Image 1: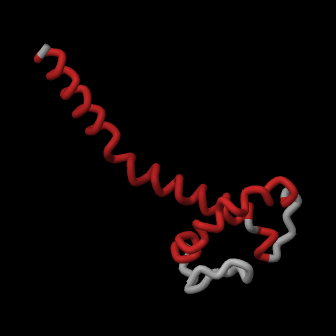
Image 2: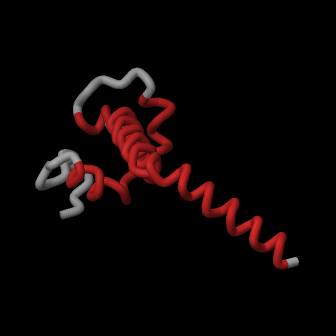
Length: 87
């Protein structure tokens, strides 16, 4: 039983050693993809013609709660959307 526990902890340690250097890079890539997705979904609200607005309009209520963290991460003091005021 203790051998099995030791092997599991060794495996977890090796996995952590391997994955640790990539964690920051993967989180930055995910954040960039989320920002791009937010721009695509909110393009119509930003004044950019969006041919997919018929499909993305259903996602707007889900993304409105994340507008504040999105615009502060992009360096904007206030929300660029007139309909969503978060600050």
